[in-house]
Length: 352
Image (cartoon, rainbow, N blue to C red; front, top):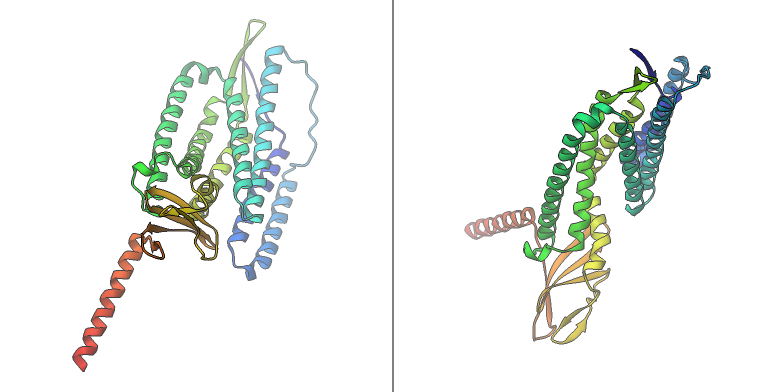
């Protein structure tokens, strides 16, 4: 049986090395103290030059001369779809680099998330095109893979939704029912689902090599075309890896970004006590969420994140009272301080 292999140009691997080296380097430099970034940048540049000369010594920049061979229609179609899937993977890696640069250069994560979403969609389409030509996949694994993806998507969505509601309950001291349809819950759950999807992509990238071979018939003769899956495996794996690292190391900024987008849509900029519309005179932007009659939650954006407080209305002046919402850790710390203070007071009383 006749067989041959379809491969991408070797220069693609240098392209991937540059793109993902820049991604990891920028992230590492960004996380370092400002006084160490200059020397770190110089070190990463020198390592880049070493990588460049390694690729050069391996002949990755030499133009390969290919013989022009007439291809049959089926064979040509497989080559075209393979090239399209590789091109989409290259586009996805470039957009992913834009997402990293935007994440580092801007405090607003909306642009970075937009680039990331475009990158993930491109990867998904690239993977779909690659697998669509695999008879082995379409005949034996497609239904099972579809079932696994749907089940994982539903399970991951329910988990992300429950996690988002739990975090919002803890932040604003709300009941489970009061968080059911909040816009923040939807946004934060969506961001968590993206992290779960990146895990799935990592798993899929390791299975790609199973479906490299394609069987076709040309003029009654069976042929096997083996496609090189590494141009897809590399961006799938690296994108998932970097996304997971960023998500795990930036859980609080992601949480604050979800709040920044959703809080103005879920709240009002004034509150009403005893029929009078009022505002807080404290510095900063305040948003008011009505829990029930004469009770609000106040959300305030400060330099290090969002804070919430209870606001209760009263008939006597000043007609309302604010009280902090403390976490479990803050309550325990406060109790320990109270115990310590009482012990010191008792000790001082004994000495007297």
